[in-house]
Image 1 (tube, rainbow, N blue to C red):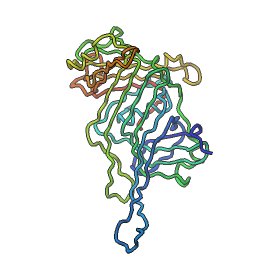
Image 2: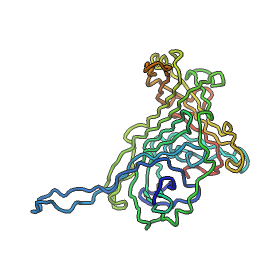
Image 3: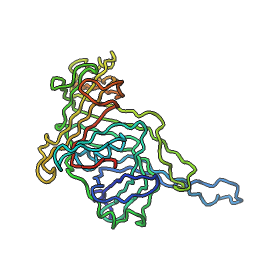
Length: 355
């Protein structure tokens, strides 16, 4: 019997759209849910055949779309997922010999990174193998008492589910998940914010949101092109417009008009969100006795949606703000970021995350 609890997913960077790559050690991640749907379109043949009951349907072109959700972790390939939608990772810097490395993730102007994506349905029932897939939209949400989540909207090409291809059940047995698989919580995060043209951020700029949501939307297309090398599966998606990035911050109670004012008067901000496993006291085999971190700089924030300070009953009134994250004309004081945001990842991976 196939149970979601015993399922496993994996992804591996590809080099040619439509060509399957074998997933293996350190390519896995834990699924929360998967909503990929679609397949080969069944097209009715409505031509005049002389048969009043119609003719055999035609099997048409193929695409799979949907949302795949995981827990946002220090390991578990979450760093690769973020790099895959941003587009540039670069050569890491060794900050502690053979132990810790930093990777600077930045936005590629036009996304071209894709991967083979696989889901093992249950413990040993079947592996569904998607030859090539791209992340169209990614949402990281850190809120409440529970762990943070990472949701990916995927566009994928041909799928094979008959154990006849590269990622068969026997081959998929080699898939492992990079550690630490420890989730991220709000208590692992530090948020600083001040005016975009002001001094470098420091501890005097701290704020304490109870919701952090980062949304990256690449606006990828679903196109079919004349290409016999990939047949009737969807062609490699391209962007139909510029990338859109949003940062939403929520607060448990309304105490002042600060965030509404930022939207109403157009005051631009800059911010940094620092996420560290030090807050989780990760030590021992699961962390390798090293720190794992995400340091995310937002160099230019434009107030986009004012808070909804509505009164829904006797409970406290909530507050918050949503920013559009755009590229500055130059990096502000104290930052190097020149895109919508820049993320420095600290982990134990010694190679380019997108290599």
